[in-house]
Length: 377
Ligand SMILES: *Cc1c(COP(=O)(O)O)cnc(C)c1O
Image (cartoon, rainbow, N blue to C red; front, top):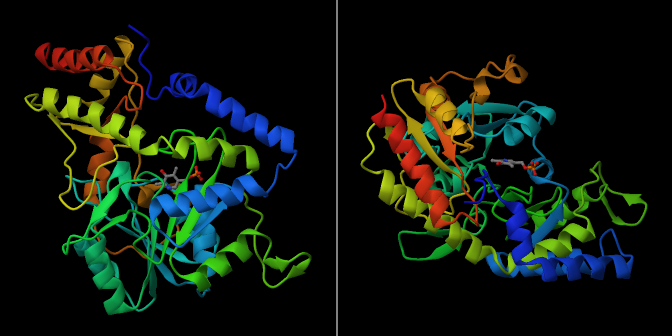
């Protein structure tokens, strides 16, 4: 059996080697390494795939969130609601811009922030809700939109982990995650559902005015060369990455399907296993399984992790510490609500190998090994 990896980008590449190699060669032959046709075409193709009016590519997912926040022209001290059980980016750029992240808890079953968490955190300084579509499925956006309307707030979706997943509204309408709020952001970090071969990110919006501002900010605040209308940043997707992403975008649905098939195998074969809780799929949204994250009960998470490691099965802990407990946010006093579920999750979560190239033999071995661990207890 082939060695099991958390993700197997090597094999994924081999399956599309000719396309990728040709794309890279195309860029090198053109000698157009920054901006140009590849980036423009990728933005158009991604916009079409997502069904959104504007896609602005940028340097990485963290920059995407920063640029999105900058485009809203907020004031120092304005509050941005962020989940505590997440990667740091959204809260980090909030702090960097002199805004205040207000951390909220998440639901134990779905790992996602809900309207109840958000409602408790709203103050007269709240300006933005920044939901994170964690592990591949979405926050209940229909509810978030209602709150945003009621309190006049912006929504920036952190869609770094769920690009391509379909969200279903109660009237039957479907939209891609990341295209529902005012602004959506994603990352093309290699491990993401749509990953490039380096760093990359993008911002999406249906609002043409915001799109214009976002494009300006991402490019040194300039529309005309050397004429700077505002302070911006230098954040761009390079042409090599854009060319690679154009090829990989053609496979995104197939990649999501492969993840869903692996997840289905885990769920079908681990559901009888007491001692762990399997990820719950929400009813209103497709799960694109960026991660398949189980919860290990009775303080056995680290023991199971070690046991699997001895059997050459890698696993990962996303995330070992909640954001409100991080030293970087030690001075943030804005939190008044308890964030206990996030802390509990940090002690229980274990993400199993999840990628587009898992074969049945590997899945069988992983499931068998997890069951063995509990039988030996
Ligand atoms: C990966 C990730 C980011 C940041 O993306 P980078 O491209 O690494 O900057 C932001 N938010 C979440 C939830 C992520 O998983």
